[in-house]
Length: 312
View 1 (cartoon, rainbow, N blue to C red):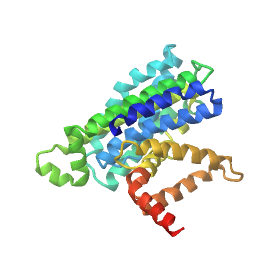
View 2 (view 1 turned 45 degrees about the vertical axis):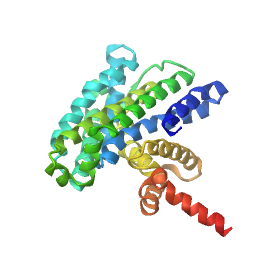
View 3 (view 1 turned 30 degrees about the vertical axis):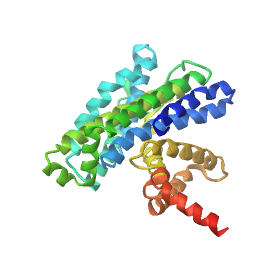
View 4 (view 1 turned 90 degrees about the horizontal axis):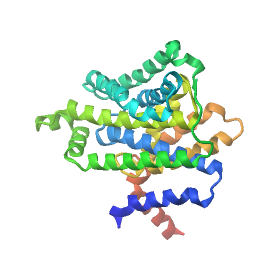
């Protein structure tokens, strides 16, 4: 039964639009699935390989701009951003990998952080190409949300399958070995730089798909939005940390919680941009009490609720 769980969930998700859900609920579902895709992509690098990246906004924004520029300058559908983003994002990840994947710990984190900022500043200054801070606006394909829902659901299903295939392959075992002890893995003949580069490239390309979808769905992007450290990179990390690091369903659970929590917090009076501070507090609590996330520490949670139930 457990092996068929992904198909059951996919089938249930596929029929949801047939229930006549409101446009707002459909919007929330689309956001949940989109952040699930970004979370699963980050999890491949940060969760299974142990390389904590704060620069995934660079790949998200690059994917978004591939879609936006294709429509704005070439007058073709922004949906071509999906295939067009693959070579650009993969090349960026490969170059980045050659430079920063030899670094470890905080040095790697700082290097990835710099990449996102470099991409944002570049997009702001290449005004002839990107319109700078004016951003790019395109005509959306559909008025209704159903079409966008099925597109991102298909991307999520493909991403889940790719991550599961890699995690259960020989490469996946190499990823985990590198995460646990890189020196020991290299002493056994595992080329750590090569396999970290593979994880980074696959993770980046999938994140680029999220960005390309965001451009098509929202119809507008600018550098401050799609290369944002707080709204893209850190939120992607939080989706994984809250849901569960190095688990298949952790990013999905994390995306549900973070999207709903963001909607609730933003609706509160006097909060404004302070919601990011609340997210930071939540992240600290999760790291202290549930370091493996809700899915990774589900047995700890089960024991906690069992004790409370017995006490009552």
